[in-house]
Length: 104
Length: 104
DNA sequence: ATATCATATTGACTTTTTTAGATTTGAAGC
DNA sequence: GCTTCAAATCTAAAAAAGTCAATATGATAT
Image (tube, rainbow over all chains, first blue to last red; front, side, top):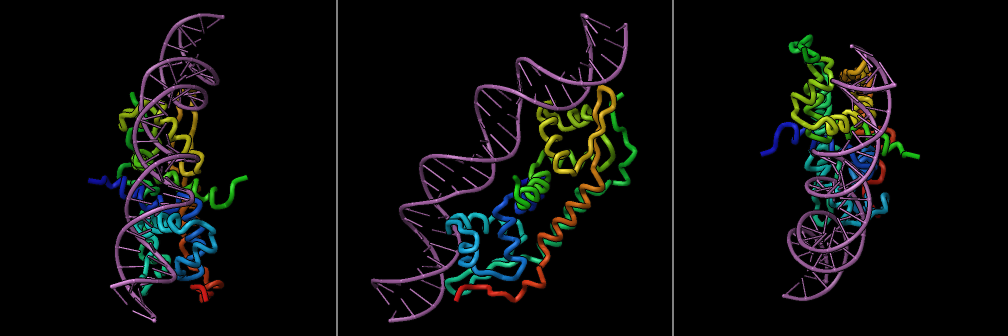
């Protein structure tokens, strides 16, 4: 059973790798076929597939199989959820503020 | 020389580890001394120090040395920059939209 | 200056992540 | 059916990240 922390970490792992950031940059200009990503990034097919799996499982990217091809695009829903999560993680918890900040 | 992608990846690495997320959760309730974090997380001192270094270098956490102690807190500036960066990474690039999405 | 305490750094080790060739799967066309 | 092509999975190896005891550093107190 994954903790909430592990679940959250998984989301941000999408943004922790240089190759995945380059993939997202390419997808910012619209939906792309895997073949285009492989060509533009100049990486092996298995490597792209590995990173796309991570991006899709984190919810940041959606895949749309169409015949032999798979098209990928940035997920509005996933992106917004990541924004909300990041905000939640870094926003002071007012109710708990002013609690003890050091021992003794 | 680090690429922009590497720089950006570094920011999100702050949120990619379960322990660091637990540290941030503790800091949401206000500034904390390292001693408190060690006690609450039940991890060795060197382990906390390792994670605090990553959090501080990513800009998400600020440290404030005070005599023998060091106090840590979430950085508003760093958090906001991470939000802006995440938004930029996942927002469609209107100018480049509708470009070629597959070969041939 | 010596002792003490808090944090940082080092080094050896383990675990996790990433890489890339080989193989498999699955859909389309013949 | 068989062939072709795209993508996913497998496998082993390399690289990166995390762990933790031991040591070093740096500030305070005596």
